[in-house]
Amino acid sequence: MSPTYAAAVTEETNNDQSIRVMVVDDHPMWRHGVARDLAEAGFAVVATTGEGRQAVRLAPAARPDVVVLDLQLPDISGVEVIGGLIAALPDLKVMMLSASGEQQDVLDAMKAGATGYLLKSASPDEFVAAVRAAATGAPVFTPGLAGLVLGEYRRLAAEPTDDLAPKLTDRETEVLRFVAKGLSYKQIAERLNLSHRTVQNHVQNTLNKLQLHNRVQLTRYAIERGLDA
Amino acid sequence: MAVFRLAALAYVGYLTVANADLYQRPAVAWAVLALMAGWTGFTWWAYAAPGRRTWRVLVPDLGVTAVIELSTVWVIGVEALTQGIPTMAVAWMAGPVLAWSIAGGRRLGVAAALFMGAVEIVVRGAAQQTATTGTILMLLAAVSTGHVARLAGDTERLTQAAIEREAAARERERLARGIHDSVLQVLAMVARRGARLDGEAGELARLAGEQEAALRALIGSSTPAGGPAADDTVDLSALINGLAGRAVSVATPAEPTLLPAAAAHEVARAVRAALDNVARHGGLTAKAWVLVEDEPGAVTVTVRDDGVGIPPGRLTEAAAGGRLGVAQSIQGRIADLGGVVSLRSEPGEGTEIELRVPRRAR
Image (tube, rainbow over all chains, first blue to last red; front, side, top):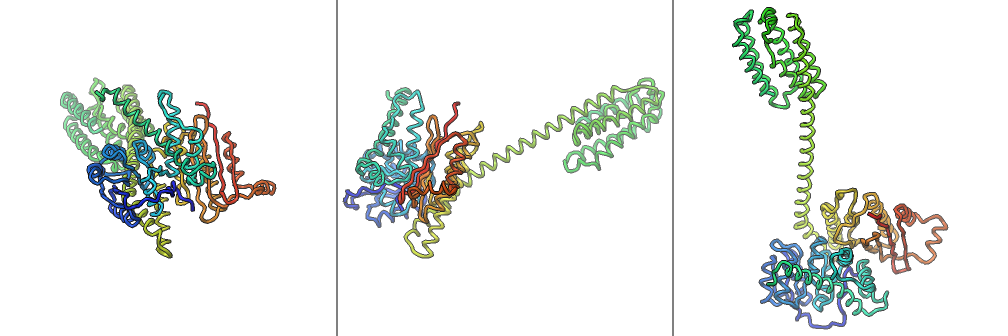
């Protein structure tokens, strides 16, 4: 069975003990289960919490490398949690986890700066591999997420007023379509005769451009409203 | 209704007080007035509850009123009538007519009005008068009251239906939230924990995982995006998302992929046929991925699987033998929509079917 997400980077042979993870999930069963899986796999679980605000408060002291974040929290939205976390720790990687694909929420969270996304139906092995990949900065994409990103670029292209809208190169479109159709980075590399690293970079670029555009939009909005003064 | 009768009764009371000395039998007039007051009270009570508005009340109501009106001839007397004294029941006579038109609509109202009109003509006829004005007024009242009553009834039914629909939608949303927060999380956890176990426990975990996927698709499809849009278009992505499951992963844009309802359902049926085919021929462990792309001029749906694939020449062979059932049904559905189907398959690499349906110029 081929994995439904991007595979871990194999050339990385770092010590997992150095990877610090914070788990944010309001469901206690999931919070403990995920923390246990990570601890068993050798990660250092530095904090667990069920609330977004508390996660943002805890982050500076806990200094996690990766935050595993449930998209639906009782207090604040995923976008707000990600914004707060990245403001506190700019190098932080955020791996989202959700039970059902609330598509717009997932897309908004990715644009706000999340590194990866995984469904809760993924197996523990897939999950651990994904967290390890996210820690290295590799984009963890599900096919569903690739479909959302493709759709977002098409939506932006159809919007005539947005002259700064990012565009995908033909190669990036090709790679994203393969991810959306369930091919692993390794399979895509074979089909396109590219290196694994290059495929990963293409995916990473599609995300970077969206996140940059998102920041530009927010800044522009702030200037228009005179909030920069 | 009750208000009308009360007002009419007050008018009758006033007339009786004013004209009693001209009546042939004033004492009986007071008794009749008391009877009318009593009857007004009774009908007030009888018509108050919808359950009591039956023939058992409606028929006696008409009868009692008619008798009271007929008593005019004997109580007031022909002589007084010829001098222009109003009849005993006057406007009060219209009470049962209104009751009939409210309970039975325009036709029964008209029937009651005609009956009361006939009674009045009999009374007036005894005094050699023609009195059609009252009858015509009653007819008009019966028609308009029946009409308004029907309108009010229809409006009430529509409002009630709308309220029920809204309550049902809200209840579904609430259930979906609840299921998401509890059952889904637990099922997903059971599936995850048990995935490492062998034998019966592993099988239970696998079943939990299947149920989780099915439930997720179910509550996902109850979101407003799944319903029809204002015009006659349907979100194709929502339809395709409903096909997701343990072995089927679906990727769509976040925004609705709107297509004319018939086209959207036809594409969804073609995708379902392709997925059924994967389940049948792809091998036990075959997984499938569906990608929906919303481009400016067309909608593209790709179904890929990692099954055994189709050996080269097998398709032409099957076509020659007339055994291209599934491919043909997909091809047919998409061609009817003006679209094209392309198929790519290599042994061991699975199969990829691309359905491309043009978007009509808006």
